[in-house]
Amino acid sequence: MDRWQQKIAVVTGASSGIGWAITQELLNSNMIVLGLSLSLKTEQDITNELSHQQSLNFFQKQCDLSKLESLKSAFQWIAEIANNKIHVLVNNAGMCEFSRLLDEDNEESLRRMIDVNLMAAVYCTKEGYKLMKNSMALDEECHVINICSLLGHHIMPHIPQCGFNLYPVAKHALRATNEVLRRELSEDKLVRLSSLSPGITATRFGSYLDKPSHLTDLPDFPNLLQPQDISRAVKFILESPLHVTIAEMLIVPTSEKY
Image (cartoon, rainbow, N blue to C red):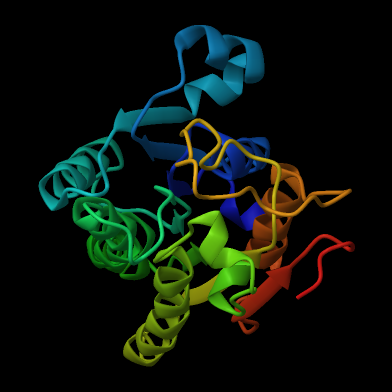
């Protein structure tokens, strides 16, 4: 990771779970991390969880990725903080509002599912690419990593009763989007694009929401992935030499059937 030292990374959904683990991993590698999140880390959390030097390299801004105006405002802030260039973008933010597709009165929820899990990654990549072009003009390499999901590869039979509705649809679409982006970026020899798909991971994803009574929980898994498993994978992707692209990586718990 030596070549990424003091380079600038943007991480969405940076304040908890996988996003916070990725943020810490990049800070450990002496990168500067700009985090976008709906809710921010408190000063006490930062003091407790980061070293003094890491805290100096971490900046965060509140951003509602379901709203394009908020997203664009956040990237204006990034441009100002980062002197109009970035090197790494990790599109990690994701969310779930539980219902079945055929349930009543969930139209706004379904829209948010697509906006956050798919369109936010598209729009962040568009905005981030503008700043990456300034880095590449200085012969500095760049990398976009989209955090996808096992549910972007397979839809298990238990998904409907768990209420994931459009989440796997959005993640399948994100994988397809990666293939479109890869072709659009093919002339840019200094930028790489990777998709990283975790299986079930021990995070607060969706756990703070009350599920409707007609939905059930996920099946039990004895050993879940940990956020640090995903952050190590991000580090592995970034460590790969420029002539190597980890186009797609799937990580699952050993106990998970897929």
